[in-house]
Length: 218
Ligand code: AP5
Ligand code: MG
Image (tube, rainbow, N blue to C red; front, side, top):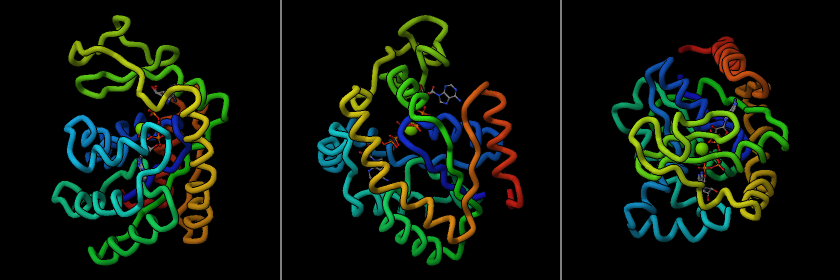
């Protein structure tokens, strides 16, 4: 399976990607996680990306396209992959098509996560991430066993710098301006599937698997 999870900031792309990793044994490729790792490592790329990320703007296409080209060609992605947060602009989608053609492979589907704006805001403001290992929690819906402490590694739980209210607003408007056109882009290719991702967690996951497996080669 080679799929893209498409959805607004806070829709649940990262959370559902991990469920797909467990079920299909293929890697999650998240440009957001890759860029945050570069920021933590203080590389030249990280320093450049940080300027855009902290304002909720998109990092230039040339930067993320280069990252994805390299990552998709790695051996662990040969069986398939889940793209989380890429592509995010039409030029990124066109470049992805070119990369896949060069590799002689194609996408199985593009999955659009449908969530109301009210839920998005709640999920983003309630999100906490482990400073050490990056595991995601939510103070309303996915609480850690001990407040402020990561269940997995005991690290400190913090808010992502771009989860502050003003930055959230900007991220949502950037999504509607630059990323939403991808819905039509993939609809025209016959690849788009959608499912409502509101409600009980287990039901949401079941709906995602059902939508993805409809006619897909896993
Ligand atoms: P990125 O990291 O991709 O952020 P995003 O798209 O804004 O999405 P998020 O990670 O905020 O949300 P998510 O959909 O993963 O939700 P999550 O699963 O955490 O990008 C960050 C920045 O990097 C961008 O702004 C940009 O600057 C740059 N960037 C990245 N990719 C780029 C690209 N391709 N081009 C240019 N720039 C790029 O869930 C949210 C919360 O809700 C969590 O707390 C979770 O526990 C909870 N939750 C999720 N689902 C449920 C559920 N069903 N029930 C209850 N709680 C739930
Ligand atoms: Mg994410």
